[in-house]
Length: 295
Image 1: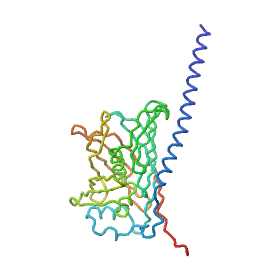
Image 2 (image 1 turned 180 degrees about the vertical axis):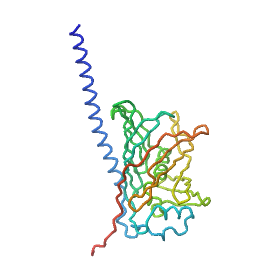
Image 3 (image 1 turned 90 degrees about the vertical axis):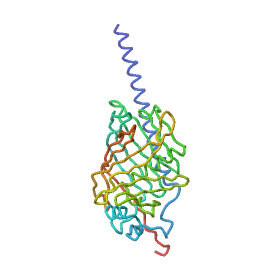
Image 4 (image 1 turned 45 degrees about the vertical axis):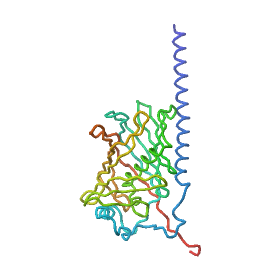
């Protein structure tokens, strides 16, 4: 009997060790994949070679914009501040893989404004000591989402469709409240007024164009974004009402950005939140002023 107990313990130990090794190797490969994605954000085009492109925010750029949009930029930005080229946003919060079933997550979101793109690198707790690794992003005009349990076992792999590109570009546009110079006309966003507290933001990248209704508060801050976004249902893309709520604005450098947000689908006429989190740290790289060869 003792012989069999020892044998079982040895087998369990070997299996556990194999799982640890596989998970460690998977995590290493995942980090390499994240690095490749981040590098891919920079491979298309760069601001800095075009001497006619603006490098700092000027109130002159607000001429002709709807009144609530002007109030937003006056609230969020400081005249003369440099424009954001890249951002790194460390996040923590809760994610609902099923309605009402929340799991803790940590993530770093890497954003490029020139060219437009992002990659969200997240760890979502699915069980004690077990995480799902998720990449969600928009790179080189293509939307993509894939995930693996313990960075080893694939659970989702979607991308390459026009619906996916639209959904991910829409996410970028809504989340630009965290990197607000990306909402300026010089960053490719056009604005159309609706009323004194609402405007429609539109962003086109290649063949993909998206629009979002943006609702502003009394101080000019973005309170809510609303759009019809594609959602996967039984392997089909279904347009679904999608809402983001932003709150607790704080000064980050010379900018005012929301520190907390909640994102929800509207299912059967009722809100179904699936993401709630906060920005715990933000780093920004700014567009460098171009110098002439003689300088």
